[in-house]
Every structure is written in structure tokens, then in C-alpha cells.
Image (cartoon, rainbow, N blue to C red; front, side, top):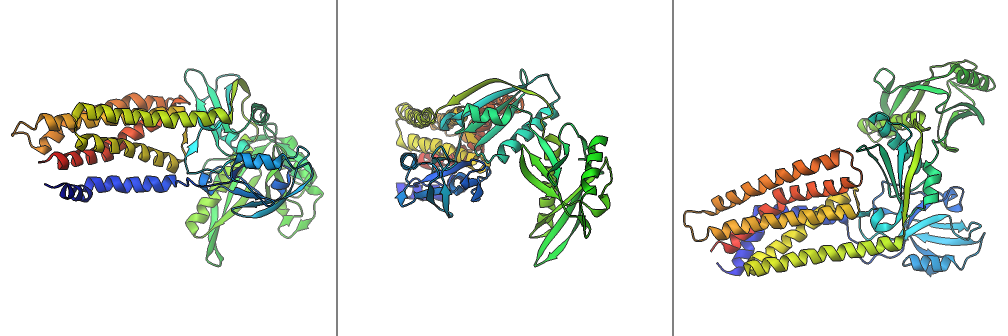
Length: 516
């Protein structure tokens, strides 16, 4: 059979088409933008003109969708060097025209001469790089005493909420329960002092009416209802214009002293229809995060079991329900964990400079490519057939692309441990491909061996190795061994992609190329 006919058969093969489909999906998830210029806004300083102008950083935003600064006044900003070179020429209390890919702002510099924003080079893909590759701070926290696992989960949620409240992006908060209990906090681009200021204290939650504090978290809130009887979404219906809204309600219990302060504060308010003239405002670490109307029937009453009511809307009833549920859960988390339920001690902290992170990235890419190239050369020396070595090389590259696509899709941060997992997965793939090739070539001289029988023998060995790898790796992920989770996740995903997508395609390619 001619080479052109074989190539045509390869691209018509079902398993090869499945591989190509997943590769296109992975590239779409990664969304490479190699020629991109500018600097991305990473965080905003509170009380700065940037904060007042409404510049926000959503940690869940895809890297390529972040707001990019392209000009300062009339100076084009291509990278960090351009940005800081221009900032160094500006003094304090100067107005600067900041043009981004989304808006134009006129910001006033702080006393320090900067704009109150932290920036990074504009992301060129949706890959999220971890602390090892970008620089930043990693802090290890330990409870003063051992607590139940759900309490540790509660603390993790509280820290995420607190850090997100401060407008920081690229945050990782995870627990480690073996051998001792720890919480690891990683923030890319932040210094040790900034991180310690945010997490070294338990936090402060306050509820105020007309600037008068009526209760505080930890001291006054005894109970926050979360069960079906104490928390529920209600009253869903259309609001006009094709949208829907749903209300929610959950109960809390406060101390008698807090109830009396509430009664004293509400007694001073006027009645405005069904509600009082002032809402109750909720503050976390001195920043207002929500406000709720007070029913007029509660005026001057000392109630220890008040109900928190609210609502949300959506394009349809299902979306409105989900939004209301999310808003209720958000408020419950604030009320229950605005103050951390346990005292944490910083047992270790370290800072990695952006320069070292950049060097790690370059070295990791170089070493990974060198490893794949070396394997391809060794395979060619072993088999001395381009019809074997080239498909094997392409398969290795395909597995790496699939893993990077999955990391982009799941917002998994790539660190050195995850890169090690990619190398392990690619190495396992090479082993399996060699098994397939050896079985095929070993059976060439035996007429009784058909292609299906050869590949069946090969995949029996491959599946045995696959399940062995999964069984050995799953404990690393589920045991909560923090830093090793990235390695475990990537390794499991890599061998799974290989067994069910890339290696079947490789087997069919080899069958077509060597079939004659």
C-alpha cells in the first residue's frame, strides 16, 4: 500500500479522529496567544483611586480574559519593564491616563508613586502557573490544637473568602492532614508581609445599624442555620421582562446581649413601609460585604433568633434558584466563619522571587522537551523505523497537550510537582507504546497471530499497568498530601488519557503503517 493511501486511512480511522477531536478541545481550552503584549492587573489596593474607579480582579476569571493595561498616558506598555520604567518617572499625587483592553481610567498615584495595583506580564494562555513558576509566597499554618476535619474545611473556606475579599488572584488554599494538620496558603506575586497581614489574625465580623455595632462574629453569633428546616430558598416567580427571582431565609441565634443592642439600635429608627429606615450592614475586616433590610415588626424588639432574608434573580427560574442558593450560602459562610473558628499559627513561610519563578519555567520547558526528544531518539535507535518513532513522538506530544488542556479547563495550577506528573505520564505512555510495538513486531513471523490478537495481548499488559498506577497514586490525592496533589492529579489524568485515547490511536496507526 502506498504512503498516501496509508496516510488517508490514518486520518479516517475512528480512534485517530477521537484523538484529534480531544486535541482541538485541549488547544481551545489553552487558547494560546503567543504574540500578546501588555501587563495584566493582578490585584488592587484598597482605598486607591484604582479601587474607587471600580477596577476589580475576579479570581475565577480565565487568565486570557483578565484586564490588560496597554497604555499609560501616551506610552505603550508591552511588558513589566515598560510598565515600571514609566511608573518610576511619575511622582506622588499625579493623574495618569490608564488605557486597558476593557476601559480607560484616570488614576491618581499614591504617596509611594505607584497606582495601587499589582501587575504581571499579560498571560499568553489560560494555563495557570503555580507559585513555583511565577514567584510569590507560601505559608504553612497549623491549628493550636487538633480539630475535626470539617472544622479544617471550614477554615479553608474562610481563608479563601477573606483573601478573595481583598481582591487577590492566583490564590491556593488547601489542607494537609497527614501526618499533622496544616493549611497551606499560596499567593502568586505577594510578599510574606502582605500574606501574614491577611491570615495571621482570626478576622473580624461586625453587623452595624446606623454605624452602631449590634453584634460581632465569634462573640455574639451562637448558631447559623444550615439544615433544611433552618435554611431554604422560597418564593420563586417571574419579575417581568422575562426574568425570575427567588428569595431565601435562614435563621441565626445571637446572645441576649446582642439582641438587646439590636433592640436599642432599631428603636431609634423610623418605619418606612414594611421596613425600617436603615438596613443592617455586614462587615468583614472593616469592609462592607452585604446589607439587609430590617422588617418594621422588629423595631425595638430583643430577638435572639432572627431570620436573615434576601434574594437573587436570573434569566430563568432554575438560574434564579441557583443564584439565591449561592447568595444564601455566601452569607452563611460570612456569618459562621467571618471570624476563624480556631487559632492558627504560622509555622513556616517562604517567598520565591518572580525571577526565579521565570527561570524555573524556562528550565521546566527545556527539560521536558529534552526528555521527550531523548526518548524519541532512543526509540529510533532501538527500532530503526521512522514509521514507529515518529508516531510515538507525536503521541507523547499529544498526551502533554491533552494534560495542559485539562489543567486549563479545570483551572489547575501548574507547579513543579504537576510538571513531574506530566513527565511521568509521558514516560508511562512510552512504555505502553513500546509494549504495543514489541507485540506487533514479535508476531510478524507468526502467521497464526492476527492484528487483533497482537493488540489484545499488548492492551492486557497496558491495562494491568494502568490499574497498578491508579491504585498507587490515588492515596496521594485523597490523603490530602497538599503539594503532592498536583503530581497525583496530573499522573492519574495522564495515564487515563493514554489508555483510553492516545494509545489506542497509536496502536491503529502502527497497524496501518506496518500492516503490509
